[in-house]
Length: 161
Ligand SMILES: [Zn+2]
Image (cartoon, rainbow, N blue to C red; front, side, top):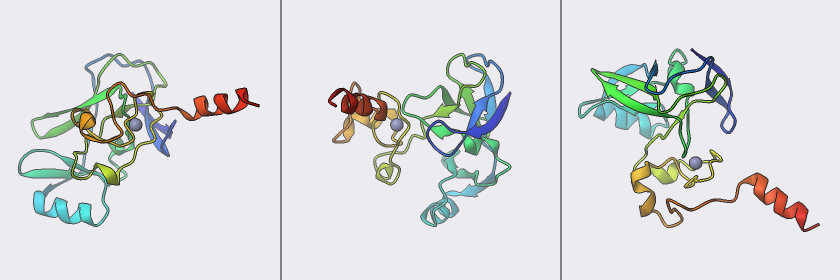
């Protein structure tokens, strides 16, 4: 159903290998179940693959065997996360075509988003891997703000020549 490939905006990514219907559980985010204390220690040491599971535990998905770690953040994602019975699932948020790169909103909160600038290229990119609910809370972000894409900048530059 999925395959790893070169991302459109961030190193490697995960792609739909065939059409996937909205609501499909595509892949589970797998890894070591760790306490919140251990999670804080590993995140402080630079591990960016730790995923919130529940009030007591997180999942460290840094292992390369965790295929879901290749799914990149996007401010205009086509997948969402569902946590069910101790499993973290990447779920299709709409119908996906074969070859589409999978993405979800990493959902960092206001306490740490500045460490995670975003270059997803979405027209509505807020500039950070920030949970959508907080976009109104950062200085440069508006729900309807449209950042100039690199292509648009180039077009503007060439039209002035
Ligand atoms: Zn973005």
